[in-house]
Length: 298
Length: 328
Image (cartoon, rainbow over all chains, first blue to last red; front, side, top):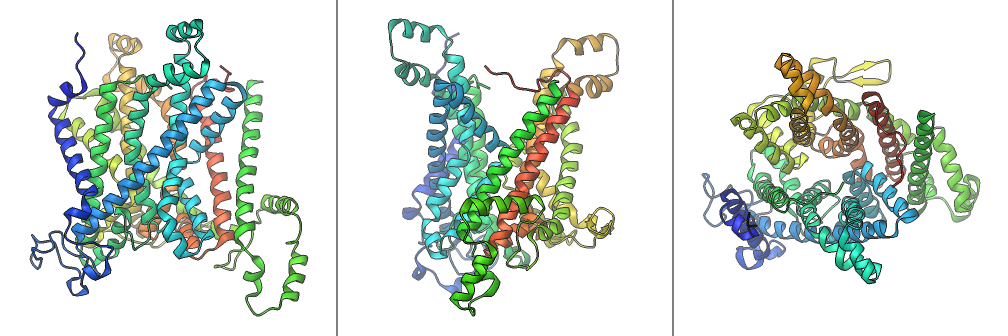
């Protein structure tokens, strides 16, 4: 059977096409937010308190000027949501980059060095996995927050969150990479390379590593969704982004109290964008898994 | 013999991890908390403070202080909360039943729904209901737990006027220290929404897990043999097949039970459930360092205990399990 390329498969799969289009729309909206949306929510002069708590345009009382209504400060929700999504994506993608680098490096080292290093790295991974990453990130950020004055923390928050989510999730990658190295190094092509006299380092990085890229890609995709959830959760608890730079989680958190007075849109419109973003990434992740069908080394 | 070496290895690991956690905890307390300031406030002079420091042993070397911290911790003394002005262990133990009951209620929901639904999806994969369940499980995985909580609050208490959006309601005191939600009607009504939202994070995962394992098991030969013997379908499914799906599930369940304790922080914050998680977030807001540190140590302890219990359960379910991992 002739192997079909990625795009040939993708073109005929409607579910994939729909999901991918929604995701592209969302990503485009988020990254082009400064040029797309009517208001800059970080600029205090651009909105008016007199416009506060207006409902979305399709409900009675809403105006066409604010498609998704306004929040209690009179900010346009469409604008805050797109800016917020931009922040959430920047944070989660950067965090996943750190996870990828750290996990791959430690996994390669464990598989390559073996012995003491291997058992030390993998034991640490076991312990860290058993302690729940959510718990680790919450406690770490809570402590970091207490180290700094509020205003200093607010300025550094974005880097702290990226670092903490980035460091918290490395064990998964390390496990897959390590067992991948152990499986691959027994194969004939590695033996052949060794016989020809290729150095172990080159075998590891140039011969073995490329075979591990597709399982890593599958994990990384799903991890972007998880990082978005983690960031939202941290911001919801008040440990994440400062009020001056609201991410989606913070927008949801601040809208929460208004649902009791019936102003559902302040919290549910950012929620809708968040959930759609995560669902599409998760579906796409599942799809990558089926397509690349990586031998998920366990 | 093997069992003994398993327990030795386990307790060794347990002690190491607890020492690391307590060391981190102590370092935080040492760097952040100034107990003198908390004890006497601003009004006392420098000389008086110095005397007090000496008396409390705060001028001792770091390691001496750490050893004292561990010794005190072993007797259950982890310091005094700045905010509550009570021993931190008393504060935590006071809140612990609320968190444990919430976690248990959520676990019941997960167990009673995921087993039949997971098996159903494995047996009738093409059926509309199975597809719906699988679609919902993707959405469920993608829904942050606090959002599920907010949605439930909006639908039930706010729109329909049913159930409750905050607190534990009326509780019953058991044995003089355990306040329970399970024995009063009001308590049960209060726990429903928080438990559902906490369960929502685990339910999709377990449905998928059980379904996946069940599909594998159902294609094995002994199932065909059982069919050939003319056993009833339910007996084959629930007795023969399900038992073999249980083993990997128990090990995941152990890790997830611990993870659920982490998610209680979010659920309790949404529902203002007076448990340890809500207390922790309050402690962070008040910069209550001893309470933060005590929570860290206590939760680390609970996680380690859970992991050990799961390993023992594993041992009871599957006699062929390897107790001591062999090296490669």
